[in-house]
Image (cartoon, rainbow, N blue to C red):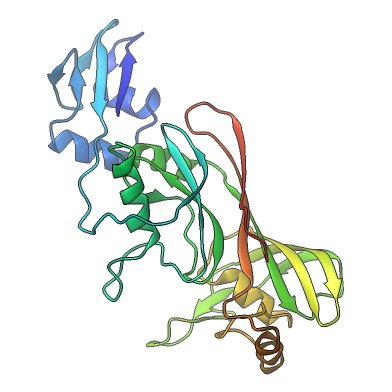
Length: 283
């Protein structure tokens, strides 16, 4: 894939990359030193004086990742030349790690790209915990990822919780901080970063409620921490669950936390269309 623009004004190439092509400074700098910025087919630097009618092209080929491509089940929810949205199952990591180099979403997406003849890369806009399931939105190159990061993506999760809030809807505004090392868990703490979650009750049953959760901020483990803090921990959560929620989870045979990334709403970075993508999974 490449970006292509015909100049309707004159100016430094850098101004076209920033304004017309909406390119991030980091990507611009990387492409500059790779000699991958072209005007009329000739490699130039960002200070090149572009004239009216000049053709600016920027190849967006991505480097080959250091993890293997794998063939596996991949539920595609949406795809175009720029974006891919898939359903991630519970128990799957987003990225390879030191302890797990295969079997991740990145491995399967890379395999899918190779099978379909796409020179695309793995750039997730949304990152889910290993045991959180649902929709994950991916950009196919770093430029599209940068544009998505500049936009506003509204995320809605569905969760099954032990008990539930007294009110039908509300806001949890409680700062979240990391527990002392070596723990990787989080807690509500006055020294934490501002953290806000909107919630609405979708269903109520005996000892169980189904909630819609919308994170306004994006702290690690935010929804799990906030629900536990308010006294209605997410069922199946082994780390933030209470003794009562863990007991009920065991009775119900829940082997993973009941938290689903249900819906993403955002503006398409290229077409400007209002997008809404829903997971096929449910809690």
